[in-house]
Length: 315
Image (cartoon, rainbow, N blue to C red):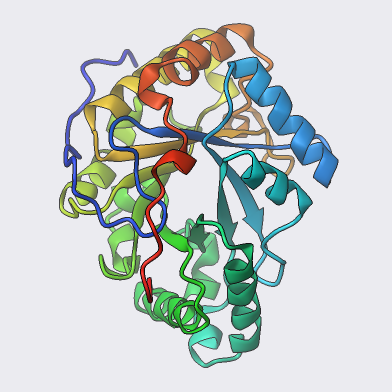
């Protein structure tokens, strides 16, 4: 599908209530998850270094994934943070009803204390894609998820772990299906609104894919918006992939409430087939479209470290 003029829906320019990680005054942060060849500390650093060299700039935000019972920070995180890059922890969470019953309070307190000791602002994307059908057995319902979110955040606040901006991030399919908003904890509980969006099994412009999400964001104008994961599948071929990336950049610019975008530079080993492969660094033309439309565009030059807000008591 050939892109037309991108929709301009989420047009709020603030002021935003975003927690410790403030959005840039103009433009958008650019970040990524880059899957390493080997899931080791050195492998992770090598993969990100190679990606940044290929696109010609450092990432403002580095995404990383953590199991519910896994420590938040390791040596590579310290190295990313030391150079001024913001970390986004995508934290898997657990069974919502067991969380609200207090079964995991000790684990949650341990994670909160670890975050506080890190002493730098981070983005915490708690149980992203909670609206996926395959997570329903753990999430139970939107109401249960909201209760668990509030329980976890209350423990973090009680422990003084107030150096995270809390990122709420369903799937674009959840907004298309009309059920993602059921999981929303509320403006007072969320710092950044977010979505994961892919041209995977279906090829369409990113604006068309996330129209319902942008409409949701427009109804919450004090919340900055993040695209937590985005990608265009290998199945669609070089020309369509490059066009999709150029249109994605135009769509981000047309919706200035979007203040952070995170590419998913990965061909996940557990997802079979080219409709689930999103790596662009091995296709020179597609990588070139990413470089010119995103990495080298002045709209995406802000680095998070320059515009952090001071921590507020209890937040």
